[in-house]
Every structure is written in C-alpha cells, then in structure tokens.
Length: 111
Image 1 (cartoon, rainbow, N blue to C red):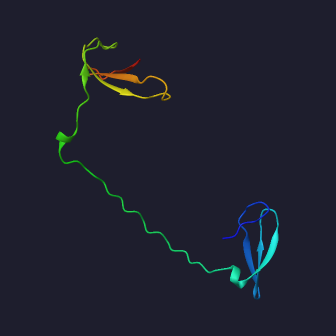
Image 2 (image 1 turned 30 degrees about the vertical axis):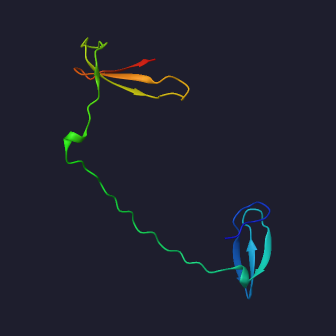
Image 3 (image 1 turned 180 degrees about the vertical axis):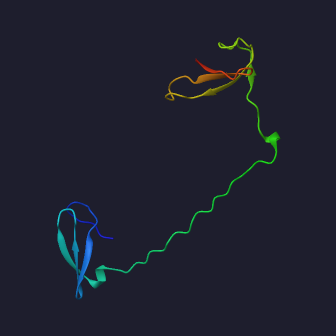
C-alpha cells in the first residue's frame, strides 16, 4: 500500500507495460515506478465469529446487595438495598444508591 507524499492519501496504481503509475485520487499527484515496487497480495476472507453463551447453573453464585436501615421516601419502609457508584469525575465523591426492599423505589444520596 502506498501513500501520496503530498496529501497522505492512499494512491491507486495503473499498469502500463512494465512500468506502474501511481495516482493520488485526492490531489492528482502521479509518479511512475517499476515492477519491483509492487508485490501481489491476496485477501483472505474472515470466518464468522462463534458466539458462546455462558449460563450459571447454580443460583448460589449470586450475592445479594447489602441492606441498610433507612426510610424509603416513597412508602416509608425502613429497609433498603444499598450500593456505591462513581457517577462523576474521579476527583468527586461517590454516589450512594438505595433501593427499597418493599416497593423497589430507587433514590440516591450524594456524599
């Protein structure tokens, strides 16, 4: 593969007898080379990727979220799942999320 020395685009080649002319389709720059400047290449088609699905056979491998005692702002229940996530820049504090065990309402607390 050859590139144009002027604009950097890939040049196309045209054979004329024993010489080869390289032409840039973008800026029109041309130069002539010899047979030794070109090598033949073959394209090998890619095979389709094989997809493998992994399914856990045991439910025991899943860990439940920890719970905490906090009042749900929607239903007033006093137990919620909690987790922490970095939602903004790394120099900011993490955000604490809660999900009510009873009604499933999710809210967050910025620390």
